[in-house]
Length: 237
Image: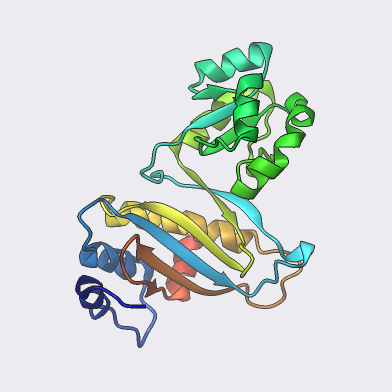
């Protein structure tokens, strides 16, 4: 792939002969960014899992202390009092028949959907539309909640959380903020994601789970992280 001059200049500042400690990598990623907008900062994790096996799949949620820097729109599947609670808690959309039809037509202008248990049977038919986009409510990700827990779930979603899941090539991709964040904020968000991945190691994976971790900005080159520095951060209280 042909790269721009600015990209090549940024890549030349990375020492690819050794993994970089997490805090240095975050600082460097911000330092060498060159786009004329506030780029996203992402972490990409390569694992030894085989997602073809059910006991080697992963689907967890990492809470980001400083959010992602992106507005999070929440759709709530709820009725009656629960719907009123969701609306009062800041849900952007309350699902009704019209919204269900829009979803079936391809609409998905929201980042998180939350549902009460009594609604799951009714929205099961939406699995093929929401599932492939990672938007289907799921108890494991804290998006199927009792009515009294709706405010907490919406607050958590809007504050900042990312779904941690393996793609078909056994990699995990997550946004941890923007270039405008401070080094400390990005390191804390990165640590939360890595800690979630480490603790959520699938039971079917033997030996080392995480192979490599790379940090990059939207337009920038990847910076490979030193796993030891991440382990140290993840084990801190």
